[in-house]
Length: 259
Length: 262
Image (cartoon, rainbow over all chains, first blue to last red; front, side, top):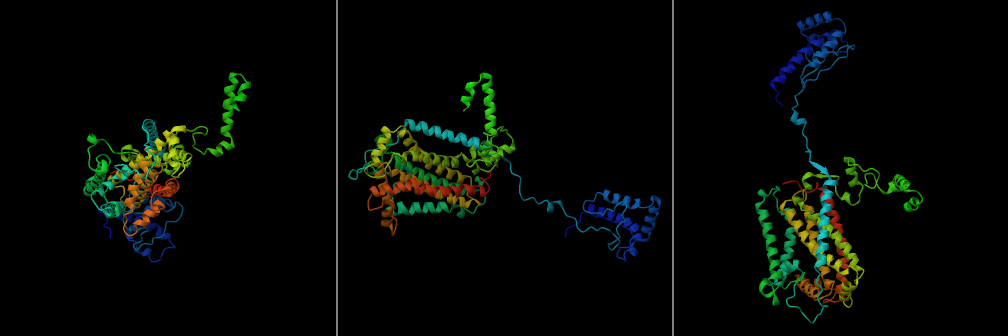
């Protein structure tokens, strides 16, 4: 049960009294009433309303009463307006009321808005212009870079001449670096396989719902460690490995690396 | 046509006739059937919310985007454009790759010579090959950075978990695309890089030899390997990639656009 606020209860009571006064003058003519209602109207109210009716005269009384009832600021209490000419409704409530306070509905329970308004802008031009500029910039960069730096084309493939060192493409050099430490099955299959697997299922393992960096210190540290691990391995494999895949310093022996 | 009409009249009549002509063309049924409402090629594009929406809705390319996006999503500092640039690089690589296909035969006897003559006797051949190669490295990098960006924003969290899974698949496909392309020039770099790579995969437990045999199309690298990797590189992997890309983009929108501000 909802607790009815004091001011609303008062307001409802006033409205009830007013309605009782109104229904009492309808009760005299009311043929369509329930029958047992007429007798329940208090005698003094009945007398008062009859006096009022006599003073204003005729059908105007009904309209006037309805207007004052509606003018009451009680939003939670509904009144039944009676037409100017139509006979007022018969009293139906237990005390001859035409309306009752069923419940008070608080605003919060009706206006439960689920969709929150999102601040949005038009894709054209706000997003497309940015994308267009980014695409142009990359194209320009690639074009200029390609004009000055040629892609490597070494001599024709020769099965009898193994270059020293032989290196995989740069993004696999981390794995090749692992080959120096582990058995090939571990370095070439187990670790990258596990890596892809863990990466793929990361969203299902990370149960923390918050996207805020301050709530995800562990996840961020772990991922940064993961990225750093591969980045360092790739850098070592690319620049610090010379003939025989032995460790060298690029500033001493030069770079053994082709993109 | 405009020139023949203009040739007859004096200067004043020319501009008048031209404007009349353009009016006729732009009012014609054919013109209006090609350019949908809101197109800038239609008469009188004005900057209104309605026309801004039409630009997106009536373009087959742009309507990958919703008509409206969250305000924070427009900030370059949030996404760094990495996902979009990965896609753009994929398109760039497709275009340059198609160009290269005209001059390349995937056999051990011809592949290297074809690349060599591409450098020396094809107009812009070297430039386009350079763009293809550097673009490929750039794409690997940008896909990788895109993944890092998404992780650091926690954008893989519900409801976007599955799109992250697709993203990892796309990363793997990108690496495979780059790796299969690595063999195609058939020079010493290609041959021995791929030898190292496939030897590693040959250590797969239980069926390592079979994996290696399928990858190489034989027991060692040769013409069959080249053909196999060529088909993988120009047809099969891009085909698979495009399917996953479509799902990836579709899910971005179905999961409520890009992830919210932190």
